Image (cartoon, rainbow, N blue to C red; front, side, top):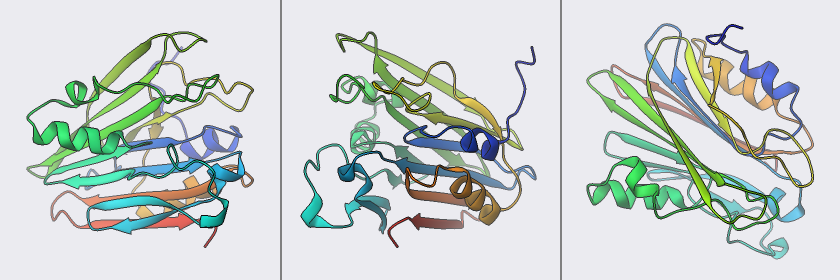
Length: 239
């Protein structure tokens, strides 16, 4: 068993009809860029009725057709926010919880201590989060998943992973193992995936790999570590 195997992200996505929402963070193979991605998928009309929209400090989700919104509580939020040299990426409104916690002097894990998985039983969708700390021409990153301890949603298990960025390596964390009823929660450590040298190719690989029926929106950010320049790309199925 090769525990250090690096998977092809496009192949992982292509053979999984429903990873749900996913975060990818890593470093380009040439060591010059930080690579970040966040995507959303959906099965219900309410979940599919969304687009990503750029904001001053990141992105937000909004309804594509306001007349079709039935419950905005778990679908409208800011997935990405920038705070000085820190980029925060999550699958829910815990983005703001993390930002506010960092401003109050808390760590990533301490900020998330007040949050749990989503109250959408029997799925109990995990809350997944990541932060990148960019400084001195390099970066490190942390990822977190908060998920139910049992089928009843009676307790929350909290897992945090800390990484030193390595050229050509990324980590992929998503909410579900695959499709199902209820949908099975992600298990284990974030998956090790290869990161190339081209931000546009990175974006195209993810979008083309996602299931055509279930994919909704994708955000990617290709950050030049020397200059801080960001190449942000947003793809929406509805636009």
